[in-house]
Image (cartoon, rainbow, N blue to C red; front, top):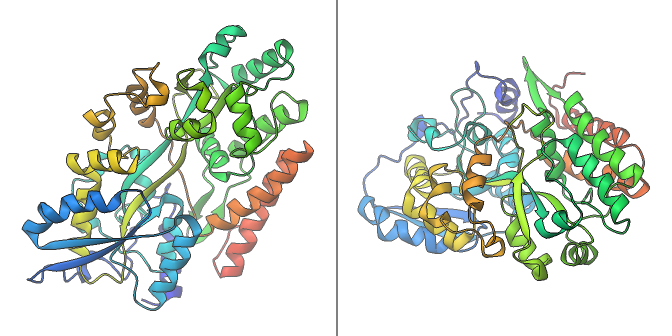
Length: 439
């Protein structure tokens, strides 16, 4: 199928809000020759730690029985991997399987790099929360990957310092703002948290929680909603706190941020389920002093969280054994033994809901030994993940976010203007690439 024709099909049906239009790429399961007899060898590009050990379970077990062997080739993640996949695909030499972040899927599909494996993954959908599964579907019927790990967003706070300063854990964002201001009055040199512009995934997750859908379609055209009411509400909220000095405006993951987290200069962090690993390195002296709670809500009646991070296992259109590859991808992300190994060897938080309460998560992270129900609460929060809507140029939107919001945070200027810039640059890039875009 010509690239331009596929691109038009993707514009018709990629949005998660659509349910009527089915997307069939040239790499549909109907073209698969996976039923051929004889041994099958598959190549899997992935970056998760210890993936070779997990795959070895398959090769020695079900893979041996079905004569399907998988070889892992370790890769970099993010845009680097997406570029490498697309380059390989142009030469018709992409691997059989790839570990792909959710936001990268539309880019890969619009370039005809991923196969629709819906016909080979019957029953898999029920293993995942709806908000997670929909990230791998581009239309009502197409399935372009199996969810692997997820990043439900969670509120973390220094339990001891909240008690010291007489602070309550905020249940709404209004209470969050009040808590930030109350802390400033009691301890002027201390911040509740910071707004960081060096990780666009954080803001994207917060916008999702508020109801934003950044990429959708109308007929055969894209509609970019980055500057929608929900996103602007989030931008104005955080921009207002930064402008008045109620919270810090410095980026995360820097030596200064690590020190602030480790010394109690910052006493909370809006993050995701993977935060314990980061805190172990960033704030080693505060082990056992943090606790987690659901993300604050925009309304007391709400019960929803955003997602920050996560990836999937996808089958490429270059694979000559798509059914076999889909069978492995399903096993990897739904089989109890595989999921336990992924948690143990890769340290990932599985997307499969049953795995989130399995024996692999019976004990809390060592850093949170003071909160025995850490993973029980995390599993409950994960079920409330809001749907997201990704498009084919997430990389442009994210880069613009880092630049525009970085400047706004540093200068304590209008976050709304930064959001508008993000919208404009994303639309301009889509048009430049030849997509039809609604004004």
